[in-house]
Amino acid sequence: MSAQTTARPGAREVSLGSIGDLRARGRAVVEIDGVGIGVFAIGDEVRAYLNICPHMGGPACQGKIMPRTLEVVSDTKQSLGLAFSKDDLHIVCPWHGYEFDMRTGAHPANPRIRLRPVPVRVVAGEVRVSVGGT
Image 1 (cartoon, rainbow, N blue to C red):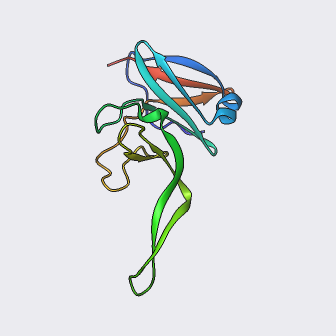
Image 2: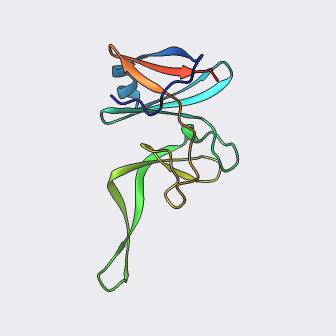
Image 3: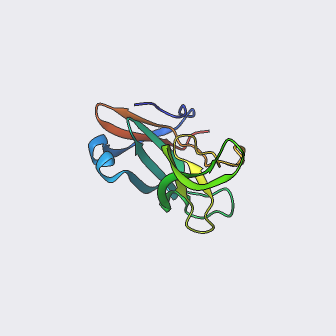
């Protein structure tokens, strides 16, 4: 399992339960000290983000999870319609439809727009997020 960011000094770790439970559900959206956090099991990886869409503050981590939609283009640059990615999963903010890559938190058209990551790791089969700190 990979942690997506390192914990800040003074942060504390909070256990969210077993990795098996998270995998079975696919995600958990929790509130810790008044802060909403979405935690996702994506294959062998775990990712966590603040549950705040950078567009207008919607609950992005509560949105629909779906494969990235791609436009299929022929060698002659003609559109052949839409298809779903076999590799990339996105989460779609329920307020306005902004999409974010589940592994990176980045918006597909503008990678500067992204969900804010929360440090997360798996220790002895237990999912832990780091909260607080400076």
